[in-house]
Image 1 (cartoon, rainbow over the protein chains, first blue to last red):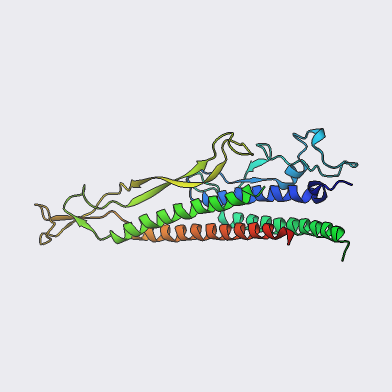
Image 2: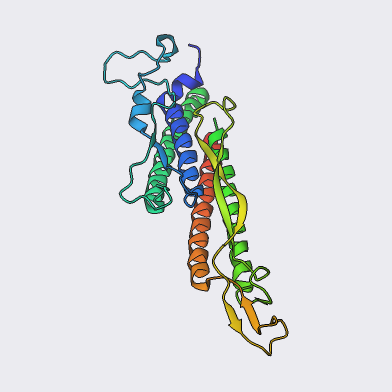
Length: 134
Length: 144
């Protein structure tokens, strides 16, 4: 059986990609928290993972036997790169709320960590298999 | 794949640089709050940085949304056009022929509020950079 690391990691490597992207977006929001006219951006994680919008059938690394299975093709485009709705935009048109961003960043970090943990467990399994669990 | 976590460091770095530039102008303004001059034109004017988002070059990266920012920069420093207040001080060595001396147009209260805002934004960026770095290091440890 050919060993495909990408396949054995499954959704986790894709999830990590999305979390990385989101971390960069939130870092950007923090960086521009004082920039006049800047609009805070974020991605809808669920929408990205579901991401049927631009999926190419042959890109599927695993078979989806149920409609509820998530696609592993991750594409972040204009469709799921959204603008944040804020309760109170400032007078200069900036919509960054640092507290909201802090919460989003913490959440994203936790999610990244858990995806990473799952991925490292997969690697552990592979290593066990290679070593014959000695 | 790790390019995005590296860009977290770049972005928060650009933010720290911009905010420290802002702190510099605030320091300059507060230091010169009591500077005096013999005319309203030459009196010290409060300096304010102008922030702008850095736009990603189109088609350059993997994710090409055109209006996506990749950090922040100071695009210029403008001088406040608030009026300089003249004070009648005929004994002052810098007094003009009418005995007037012009102070700076720095509003110290405003500068203090600005300073707190700048240092908060700087702290946020440091937090983001630290977390981003930790995630990167953890990812490097994946195969341990």
